[in-house]
Length: 340
Image (tube, rainbow, N blue to C red; front, top):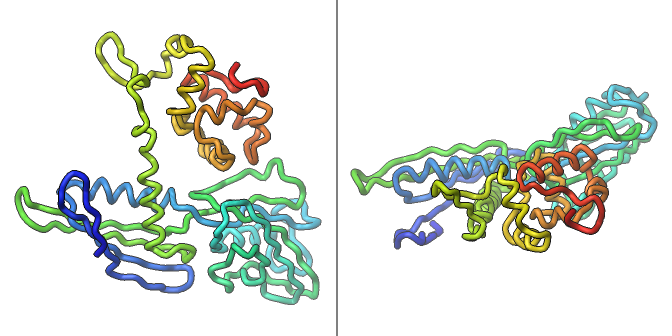
């Protein structure tokens, strides 16, 4: 058991892996016990860990494919058994592991007749296929096939429209979720005020991460989420005449307008993260990938520069601009000079 001493008492919370197995290359299982918690704490921790494991742990997947001489996804290629749509669906299922956070390029170049699998893909040295036998397509004639691929590391689902892509280029609806399932069960011991809870956490992964690696990354993500609250300062709290204390409401535009640009910029850079804009997932993820974490980071981009962020687009610019105005009564700069 590995101990962790809580700050509120001298009682140590310990955890250990009680079972670990590889059912096959793309299905790993781990069972962990953590003990002891006070009564009621396991429900909080277990629910948070389950959501963080499924939604915050990053995975690697193919997000884009390019075929030569293909018009649309329902096309067929002479000598290929599958349609383009079938091939894209199979590419979506390929399980990859990457040691890089950058967008990487890969190539699938083969000559038939041949049954093509994940092992035939030429990947960068820091990206590998977990199961080389994963099926992609079958070439039935002596022809050559070349498919360009884009590999990215992300979390959750990514569903993209094909609009904006040129002929032969297709987005792949990526599922960057290395954790397939999480289950948490609670066991009680003791009685009365001395009652304690022990959770058993079960995790299934796709093999790109082991269960213990997944639970560690989920824990780190979970710890990072509330950091904006730790950075809150007394001057950021708005007190109304009725005595109610809270953060400054979005409707309080006149209060924000009392600050000049320099003071406002200083406050934003220290305390305000883009999470508070409540942006759609696509716009939020694009900003994060561009290393834009705070409102001050965002305001260093003009509207024109923002539209050039990878996969961002004019629609996302409008969403960000509206969110900035609704929440903070400020706008994206119209040029590179910063605040309007």
